[in-house]
Amino acid sequence: MKDMAAVDQNKDGVVDLKSEYNFAHAYYASSFDKGGKTNYYNTVTQAFLDGRKIIAGAKGEKLSSSEKAALQGHIAVINANWEKVIAESVFKYAGSVYKDIVKLEENYSDKAFSTYAKHWGELKGFALALQTGKSNLGETAVKLNRLTGMGPVLMNASQVTGVDSAGNYIKEEAQSWGEFKLHMLKIQKLMVEKFGVKAKGNDMLADMSSLASKVGSSDSAEND
Amino acid sequence: MLEYIGDIFHHFVDPKKRIFLGYLGLSIVIALLWLVFFKKKGLKSALFKVFDKKILLSGSAISDYKMFLINRVLMLVLSPYLLTQLAVATFFYYSLLSIPLSGLISLLNDTPAIVVAILFTFVFFTFDDFTKYWVHRWMHKWPVLWALHKVHHSAETLNPITVYRTHPLEGILFSFRGAFSQGTVISTFFFIFGDKVDLVTILGVNFLVFSFHVAGSNLRHSHIDIKYWVWLEKILISPAQHQLHHSLDERHYDKNFGAALAIWDWIFGSLHHSEDIDNLILGVEDNDFDPTSITELYLKPMKEISDIAAESLSSFKSLNKIFKI
Image (cartoon, each protein chain N blue to C red):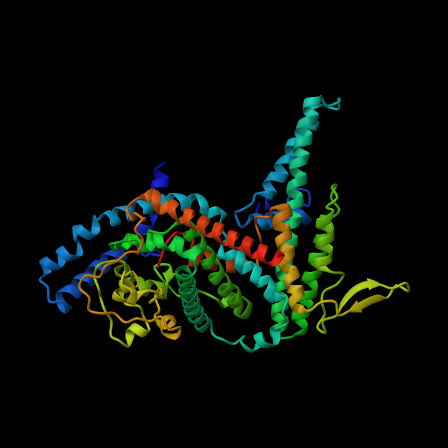
């Protein structure tokens, strides 16, 4: 199943939420796999099925140590791939925000601004989700939060930077649009370096790297 | 193993490379046309001249072929560790984004994609050629760099493979130059024009590079002294002009550094037009340098560089003594 939220597989006229619906991250996993570079959806689902088989196979008895180890293996697969799916989403929405800023720089429209705000919200959501896993991301989390910001940079270049003691948002001109775009690229770079994302939706440097390969390299000992 | 052998000889089938068999074939045709129509030779004697054994199988030429093989193996090993133009482009792109220039850029939003592609192709080629001119000039002027570049100039006969008669350290310097010049142009264009940037290509090669090679770039390193009109030799370097660059005659020293374009030599005062010389003597003035010995070609430059370093270190020390006193 690729990039599908719902499908009426048995054609009974209704979507069965237990067997015919992809929830949340599973939907994202399948959408990234569409590019053919990753196989998150099947990997995670298969690990769940294999893990369940071990548990069901014990028939209510205690798991042997080898069964426990095998189960832990499946858990690790789910963990790592699920985290990557979230990192892919962060990567993708950082690219969307970048594109939205370019559009807003060209022409302002209310619609373009609301798309920008929506994409920033998605980015922030996934960036937070990434930090709710079992391991502490440490420095990566600090960088990610600083780059994403507490709110999107607004049209007058102001941005929410904190909350005062009365609970009001503090807005400041903390960074320019150019810097914010740069931060989006840095988020993409961070996702590649720390999580090894591969699907790379909305890769903002993809055009540049394809052009670089088009010109060809100059790593040859030749005298003109 | 077969794969490696394929990699070593890949330049012969890669249209991005000068020694692509298609360009070599065209160069032979151009050379024959020149000899028959301008030098009034018969076809048979023209063929003998083009495939002259004394040139293609000279001691100097044999050492070119050996260096081609050795350098290809060395560069295949080294290339993953060299700086790429993409790394430079990414770095510059990040730096450019921190400059508030969006006002200027929005003025250029309406530029049609085809104009952007033509402009990029042109600027990319010209800037690359410009940096080649300067790096080449420095290779001649600075003793440490000349120690390396001398290897190329030690050739006593020229053939298309002589381009690979290059010390590997010089090859590494050239790869830095390429990464810098290409990376800056790519990132600047992406910063200004975004995803409209493209390269105008033929057979997947920059249209201008392709034209340069089709027009007989291989004849620069050959014994066929094709000359252009005087006005054209101020814009494009003719094969004869580059052959003068290799001449032993002092009058020709430090002339015609250009790669494809002659305009840099013209602007910076190093242009020398082609001359009617029948037997140009090529090589370098250095009696203890055997241009056919592979060991010397690879090791002598290192020895010379360490001598230069030792010398400047000792003069620095004596200078230090003077100041202490």
